[in-house]
Amino acid sequence: MNFRQRFLAACKREKVDHPPIWLMRQAGRYLPEYRALKEKYDFLTLVKTPELATEVTMQPIKRFGFDAAILFSDILVIPEALGQPYSFRDIGGIEMQGAIRNAQDIARLDNTEIQKKLSYVADAIRLIKKELNDERALIGFSGAPWTLATYMVEGGSSKNYSQIKTLFYLHPTLFNQLMEKLSDAVSDYLQMQIDAGVDCVQIFDSWGGILSADTYWEASGKYIARIISSLKGKVPVIAYAKGCHIWPEALERLGADVLGLDWTIPLEIFYDTFDGEFAVQGNLDPALMNSHPDIVEKEAQKILEGFGERKGHIFNLGHGILPQAKIECVERLIATVRGFK
Image (cartoon, rainbow, N blue to C red):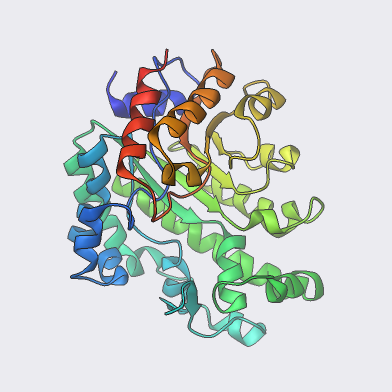
């Protein structure tokens, strides 16, 4: 069983000798080879140039040999394809071109020809698949409609998300129009990735946890479920909704094959809630990768031993790896997971 097969078997809750491992946001400032590329090219050039996106995607595979690679891209390519470009603030965070606030703004968003507008992503996927040679899985991804909408309505990164919540509570019809456009665009985008050859897709709802228990489904969950349903089970789907494990009923309704978890709940407790109906992904605290290899090994062992003999675990961080992560910590984490019996 090669790395790709082990990853896909874990998605289906089949028995594997040890959990497959990959790390969310594999590429980043913690890799010296990525920093070297960033000295030559800006981020958006890396994303939009298939050959460069392939190189960045393969960097952590060549260095660490993870079981799966994740496509190098950005969740905000969807708003850009709709007509709302993005950039990065000098002080950090995202800056959108304008902010969606009214019916006219929503009407201007063009969700047609998404696959044509984002064809550079499909081109990158085909190049990456050749590099991986069916030895390792390739994960495609998109942001969830709610998470994308937070950036689009707030005009960028936000601290309190007041504008998107106001739209949801005071203008439900407009909110739904925006989410329908985003859902259609994400469905088309993920379908394109599947057609290009990804083995699995992940939907990131990074800001789902800012909602309340009685609003998560209406504001976010039902749109994710619609997207997953549209993919018709062609590849496994991972749903990662940060901070949302406290609403298991809503997560169950998403229809995903794998549920990703942040680091605030033991995997085995969540898994047993559903009696093993879903595979789980996670969930080491990313901050630990900034510490010491001995600490990483100790904390990873806790997760592995806690999950025990259950089937269907993909080892991952509880969120994206941080720029301060140490190479030696990543190396120890991989050795710990692969050495676990």
